[in-house]
Length: 149
Image (cartoon, rainbow, N blue to C red; front, side, top):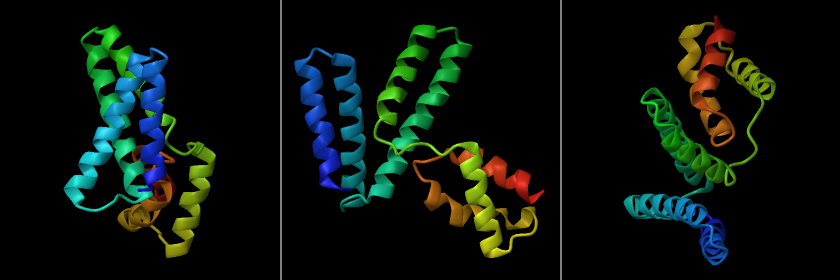
């Protein structure tokens, strides 16, 4: 991962603390911790794609928490998770629209001559690196299934 991204986030932590934005600072610290932990576990610097995967995973975890909190009628905790997602998303590239995602999926399907649902794994294998951080893999999977059916 580029050291610039990590340094940038660490600088934003300082800025947030100086301006009294404790929630933003704590969320940014969570991002830094997750990235550093993964670097330590891999014993090497993360690539940008790996960093995007971690951020995407953090968002997915929060979305799962939101649904559980809403089921338990804990709206204040659900809102906290939504606020964290908003901050994390600032470090992801702009998300692909469903139309853009469909075009990309169709290109991959044509590229490998996928014909049926049996080819879904091959399509997703090629598609996943192209959409990392730009689109939800679950949504992409549903579109692939729909287009191959």
